[in-house]
Structures are given as structure tokens and as C-alpha cells.
Image 1 (cartoon, rainbow, N blue to C red):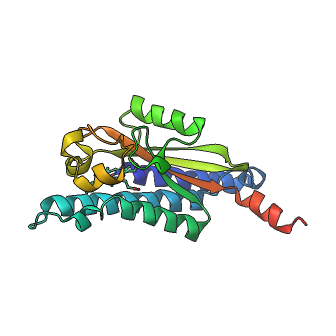
Image 2 (image 1 turned 90 degrees about the horizontal axis):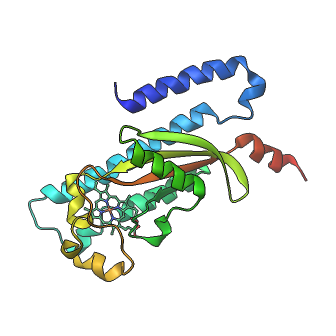
Image 3 (image 1 turned 135 degrees about the vertical axis):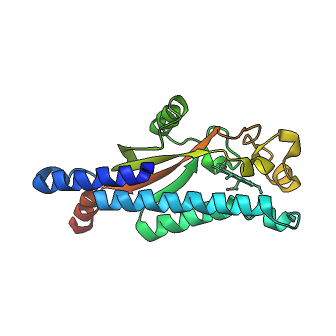
Amino acid sequence: MKWFLRFGLGLCLMTLVWGWQPALAQAEVNPAELAKAVEAVENLDALRSGLASYLKDAPEPPTADTMKQVCKPVGMKAMELSKENGWQVKQLAKKYRNPDHALDTPHATMALAKFEQNPELMGLWEKETLNGQPGTRYYRRINVEASCLACHGMKSSRPDFVKANYPQDLAYDFKEGDLRGMYAVFIPDVQQALQEAVSP
Ligand code: HEC
């Protein structure tokens, strides 16, 4: 079974358990929302894989413009998802290309270390407080595929637009199967948000 189906089943089971304990449910993440975040991240990852493999297999050599259409759209879609859902959706990496994607909290650094130590680990979530807001952060690993190496492979073979636009670039010298980074979705506690909305 695909790992996220198993994950989904687990979430359903937890919904059941939480259903019997309404008092507890209020303090924990809403399982339906977590499931929605898991699915959104799967789609986001599939978007990138699709764009990268399209570029790799395209009959025409890529132009400067098509080259830009792989990871930038993923960042834009992440922003869209944040706005639509009231989440914060980010990509995080130790070896980042865009400095906006540097690891941003000690929790995030620990999550990445867990993915590093355990190549089978696909996702995890934790209760966290981000910018003073309590909530849940869902992390999902990003692996390097063969199609990524055109831009994240050897330093010297990076496309010109990368060399020119990302002077601080660290996101090269990867090999297929390496851990590239992770997605991080912060879901603020709804209960908390509601309380804040009604308090004067
Ligand atoms: C055509 C070039 C290109 C290809 C192919 C490519 N990337 Fe990227 N990647 C980039 C650029 C450029 C950025 C920085 C985008 C930005 O400014 O947000 C980036 C950023 C990222 C980031 C965000 C973290 C960071 O370093 O800023 C991740 C994660 C990532 N790429 C993973 C992948 C994966 C996985 C693949 C293959 C499935 C892939 N990339 C294929 C060019 C590429």
C-alpha cells in the first residue's frame, strides 16, 4: 500500500478515537485538515516531478524560459495554498538555492535530521508554536530524482540562469535518491483562532 494511503487510514482511525473523546479533540489537530494538507503536499510534489520530467524528456532543448518553469511554480503554488487554507506552506532545505527556504526553526532542523537518518520516513507531524501561534506542522521529505540533476547536479553544469540569479546557491552536487529537503505545512490551531476571533 502507498505510504500516504496507510497514513490516511491512520488518520481515519484517529478521527474515530477522537470522536469518542470530544474534550481531547479540541486540543489536537483536526484530522480532516491534516489529511487535506497531506494531499495538497502530494499534489505539490507531483507538480514538480511532472514539470522536471517533462523538461528532461522534451523533444526541444529547454530555453531559458522553460528552465525557470520547474521549481519557481512550486514556490508560487505553495503561497497560493497558504492563502487559500490559512496555512503556511514552505519548502525547507539545508542546502538551499533560494535563501527563503533555509531551515527556519530548531523543530524543522530536527525534522530534517529525522528524514536524513531514516530514508524510509516519508512524513511526520508535530505540535509546534510558530511566530507565537500554536498549531501543527506537517513535514514531508523531498527526494532527488534523475530529472532534478539538470539543475541540482554538478555545480559546473548548472544552467546559466541559476548561476546568474542565485549567487548564494547551495543546492547542487546532489545524486539521485539523496534527500533534497522537505515541505513544511503549518496548520494553526482552529480552536485557538476561534477563541481569538470572539475575544474583544
Ligand atoms: C530547470 C531547473 C531545475 C530543475 C530541473 C529542478 N530544479 Fe529545483 N530549483 C530550481 C531553482 C531555480 C530553484 C529556486 C526557486 C526559487 O527561487 O524559489 C529550485 C528550488 C528547489 C527547492 C526549494 C529549496 C531551495 O533550494 O530553494 C527544492 C526542494 C527543489 N528545487 C527540488 C527539486 C527537485 C526534487 C527536482 C526534481 C524533481 C528539481 N528541484 C528540479 C531549479 C530546478
